[in-house]
Image (tube, rainbow, N blue to C red):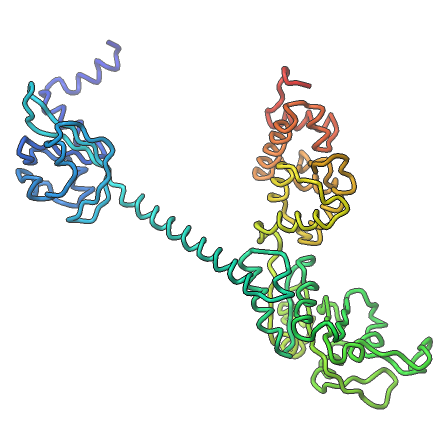
Length: 466
């Protein structure tokens, strides 16, 4: 016997075996109950009180048959066999427990039973909450599908099943029948123009004009002449007979002002006056022309913050923001990433191509700051450079790799990116059968960079298949 065992036993040398036995039972976290052959409780440890919330003196000497007559633990007296891992609810107090019950024999005679139980009420509560959340999530998913199915064309044809995106589509359909101005908010590339066209089609129909104006693409000096038009001789270089502005061209239909935040303040004032009066005055004109135009504005900036900063007119903001629809970015619509990717692929020159699991994994981890437009461009690039029937990591643009596999120096301080890089390399190696040459080719990195990353992540193995 070693020294530790002897030292340990010396602590209990003055105790009899019953005292040592009781000391051990009192120290365990599970509830322990010992019953005699009549189910009378002859011992219960402190954990019993803690778990069931019943003072020991209230149950000591009482029969379990009387206290909890329906407990499954009593079956040990009938079957005279151990009961292992049984679940039940202690009905008198509503606790959920799992217990083991073992018969105690003296020779062939049953003289009692030992029950050890563990409180799982908290686990049951967590499971119930999890089940509820799953039920609620499935309900929302079904509701979401139902919502998407209830949409009419052209909203139903817009790709996306994410619930927040579908809610935006539902709202767009609801407001399409009105003539109120709509403000679409969302990052660049989320599809504001697509939703604007859908609203136009649903409200005005294909026979009415839809005039789209990218406010950020028109030089400040040409803004007024482009939007409001001009008369002959209004300025040097003006066309003979003048030119209709966007309001006149959109008469009876929809004027879509994209990137509205880029409008100069002086043009904002005239735009507000034009909307309020319902008539437009060309540059150099002496009379105004009335119009009937539905205004849809869009911005990728926080327009209200610009109002607070004095960079956008408050009165124009509220004139445009009668109805506001926010379109979530693609990184908040993870479930839609592959739906869109497959759609772009099916519409490409090589619809037969498939997307490798590694690319799918990379797509789901990528931040997509360029949103849907960026995803479309990545797929277009992959389709062009792909030389087989399966799009792999090497077919993706270089900048995409720069985002997924950050340079050594920047990743060193970022544990999340560090882990992502390591996982990406491991996946690539697995797909290439641990062949280094194929792996570095698929990852699109040089041999020197590849080996440096292997050593950095502790993945370098001398005996690997080169």
